[in-house]
Picture 1: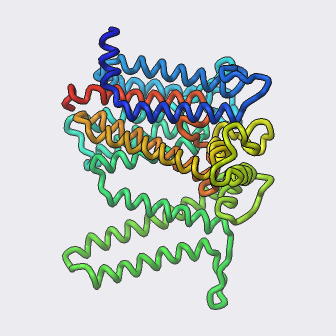
Picture 2: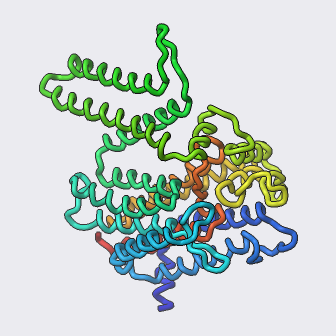
Picture 3: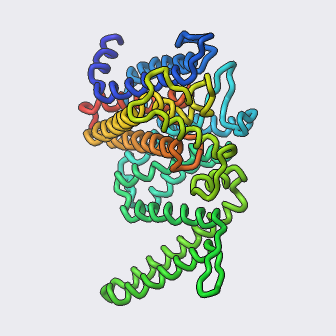
Length: 443
């Protein structure tokens, strides 16, 4: 057993493991600095955030070593079982007492466990297992529907908690499907849908009126008119620029696209009025710059921006931050969702740029390792991991600097949170284990 473990560890991708450990250590030191207390200065103090984070990191590494001892075939064959167990956890947690207004955690003593963090790697395993099955092709409608079902089931339970931030991360699986052969038109369509949806929410939130030739229109309805007008212009463009034998399909595509765009706008309007809560609407208005609310819903973002700006070019130095630590409490949640501002204040623009390079190198390495696989399962799982981590780090940093609404997405390996560090670590160690047998597996 010992020799087998050493043999597996010897095959582990060292650059990926080093980048992973670098992020984990940097994250722990940042949590330590952000929540440091002179009453409990030891980094292993369990009554402080950094002590609990250290415990979770140790647990994650121990479980990671255990994963490295498993057979790759066992991991593949257990994919649906893991997916089913985590889905049941997502259902059960809905009946747990609410914490911060959400039914997202199991509370065990002084620790909490958030099953939605485990749903990310569990869903990745299920998707990888299904898409790697012989005869399954992503181009087939049946395959698309099954993948959608695998994503939608945990997504539905996460929505009920509610945890919109985690639900948003599940959209990252579209990149995995694209890598496996999904039409680029669908990816492009989703990109345009995102733009149309954001613009719809912007116009709805603005409640502005537009005066055209003495006629007053609500900007929201003028936006609908622009979509219809664009569709009409495209229709005439098809008539005069496309060869006759291709026009029929182009007309149908244009009609379907315009109809879906209009439906999306109406859906966004309905959701804004009837689904979004006041705090959600306020966050969008602050993000779009439609109102200033420095003491209300925009407080966290403004405080975070001031902390980031105070870091300057080279930062104030480790443990010398004054706006992003527990001592002054200038930035709420500076150890969790807003951990990036703690790093930025201490290390400045150069340090922030270095961290982004480190994350980018980590993601690129995952993709490089995924592309060298003979096993389709491992390749797909690697792309799932890269997509999830990319969404997390992109949206978290955008959220902290005010380019996205505050929706509670942690920065991977940095933000305080046992479930998050454990879930991300399991995902990476599963990938490392599967990669270690790449020369021995044919599928």
